[in-house]
Image (tube, rainbow, N blue to C red; front, side, top):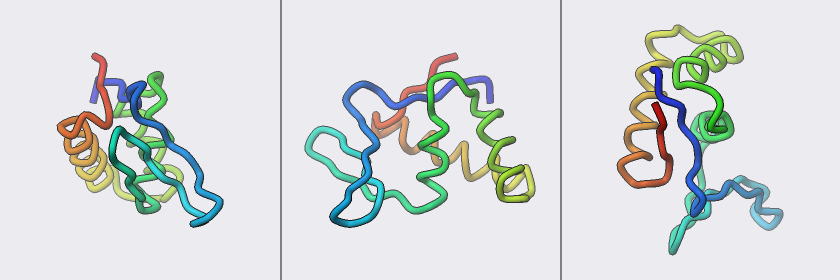
Amino acid sequence: QQSIPALPRHVRLKFSETRNAWAVLAPERVLWPDEISLEILKRCDGKSSAAEIVAGLCTDYNAPPAEVEKDVLGFLQEWTDEMLIRCEV
């Protein structure tokens, strides 16, 4: 919850005009995040903590904090393991 997630230098979030969708560009990979994943990724700005991301999503989607926290932390862990997000403490 205290960690501050950000996209590393080698990962970019870019809008594809051709597909009318957001893409995550990483070396030798292109990922097409769903709506919720995209909302999390947009908030991984290197300034907001995981707790702040959870709180913002709860407010924006009027969703229960426990469920949002579980989903966000799971997503951040998975993407950190894949080296697509870095988390600073």
